[in-house]
Image (cartoon, rainbow, N blue to C red; front, side, top):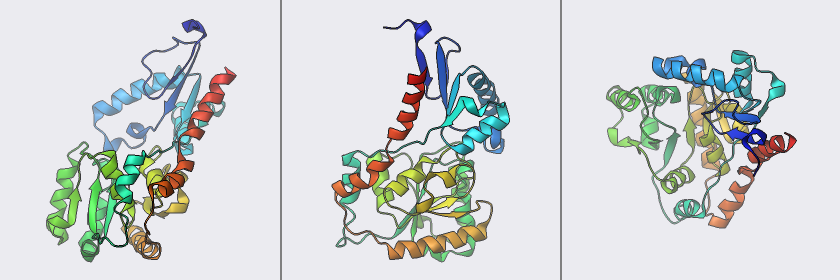
Length: 293
């Protein structure tokens, strides 16, 4: 085995040591606490700022999960681009996950139309935009049940969203919050939805956009930060601060969903569809850097 002084190390998130290995690289997912501090508490912002500063300074190379994140690191910390590169994240589905969803995608089984809103319940994810839309378009909830897929996050966002129902003129049973669910349940919900909604204000990458796109689903998606990089061919974009654009994007997604209703797909079909979106490119870029050291 090589001695520590000759070892190259990759840190996937936090770097617990600095200059311990001969060469050190870190993966930077986003600078959300710095770029969007309004969505974080002060302690989190200060902790992140202090940690990320040293991680950036004492890394020989940074792998950023999107061009948007790389640009943020360059702007905030003046890290030379020659010491950074972009790695595209991947997504993989186990056969049991796809099987759980594929069993439901059958033309002889009637399922109530629904849309999924993907992501942890926190203010940055912009779930309140859905309720802004329902205030003036309550009929949407009659056409589609709205399923929020994601665990409860911080700043009591779920309670705030539920209170919005009182003024939306929409029955509470038309909105479902799943909380934490298994990968099988999550994949099945995405696969069998009419379309997905991802209204986030800011993302370092936006992995659910890739997952939905890999499954062949259209996503009504914010056009901010990194999100247009992920899978633009499967998205209908809108400005997350513009309710009118959001309404237009929903209508476009409805039409697209009506024109591309899923026929029955086998697990093999789904495995073939999702295979090109795996982690090979991400790991390959990291492996090349390691070999060059």
